[in-house]
Length: 95
Image (cartoon, rainbow, N blue to C red; front, top):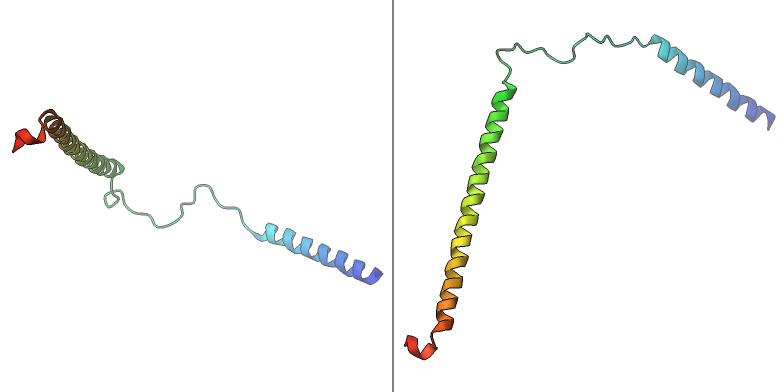
């Protein structure tokens, strides 16, 4: 039992030492170091252009939705008017 405890403690110490050595060997990342590839400003798409295109698409979607709602409203109003007219006249008067 004593040997198992001793082996476990020595393994923990070895793992701790390996972890410390790993942390020491790793060099810190430079804050000024840029990651990835560098694209010249001329070839990068402008953020404002993307925002403008997005807003244009959103506006077109809103216009389509408004048109659909408007046409549905017209259809419903026509149905209501037709129903009101049909309710006013007896069916015998229509023939």
